[in-house]
Length: 234
Image 1 (tube, rainbow, N blue to C red):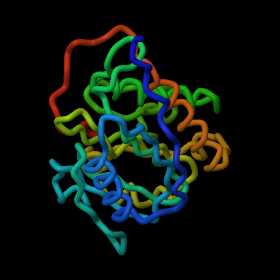
Image 2 (image 1 turned 180 degrees about the vertical axis):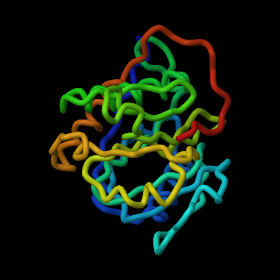
Image 3 (image 1 turned 30 degrees about the horizontal axis):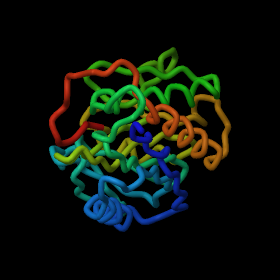
């Protein structure tokens, strides 16, 4: 009999959780996983925290105030997490066979971004990709180009991933003005509420997790251009 495809990713709701503890738990999970470990998506809301990618320039933190600044091992520059933001961590094995083939890292990023675009569309918001700048940006005036979702990943040499994606729902956006978001001076950051979409955080969490699980369950046309192990930027 042909091998059975792996089960869909398990979705876990961590509630509101400290960033440093969650970061440590992601690493521990990835250290301990085996070829048979199910993939998992962790939904979480963090207290205010600035996080730095491996290549981050700390000078992009303009004013930390009393918010902790934590060095991580994801890709990218500085970003902010806080209440009112959906964060979903993707603990995946990209080398695991799925219907249609294996999932390559560029496809992985593309599918994460597409999941965010689809969720925004469900609230009548138009999001788009910007070449060379991972994440999702508003596609129409008057806030065209403003960033609403950030992406930062760690891809280990064995194909296992952690870190993930954040989508701004209804936040205090002031801390984004205390940094150069993702290393870009003056980059405007918005949330769904700013754009006129009133939605409970838990509802958006569930929608995004479900969309990610669906997007990542299969692959389309296999892309044989692989991305080396390392990090995808915010």
